[in-house]
Length: 164
Image 1 (cartoon, one colour):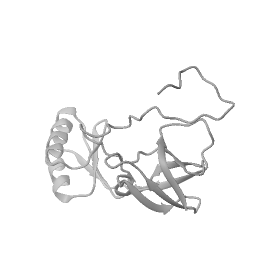
Image 2: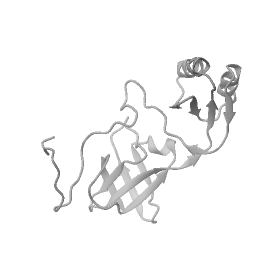
Image 3: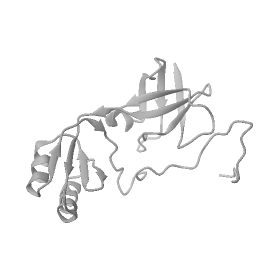
Image 4: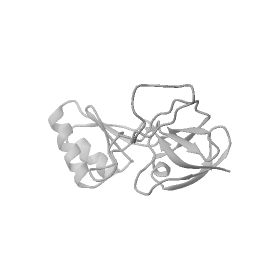
């Protein structure tokens, strides 16, 4: 079984395989699964820092595995004006639910109470499956920011210091 303990936001080496995971699985610190290429893998990450779509995992044997998001059932509330959109985001946020926020749309796990709230403010609900990438909150690792850890192959050079 492959074992991955390290994660990177980018690498300068070849990606060997990928693993496609839903949001609930990506937020676990310990994951046992199969890569998209069929290899068994154990992923061991720091608690409280969910895997992000696009991150690269490095296995003990030096393989690089890209994290991909699995389309899953979600509710996407779409607004036509910013004031209604802001009000819905405010009320949904007060319910401490996981939200993915885009430009005039907000996505959450299907919940008829939350859908009714959004509709009350004039938003339209779409139930098309999508990759769910919620905000990580004010006290967690924010959005899509990553540490600047990365790998280089021996022949690749670029201009910044490697003292991290």
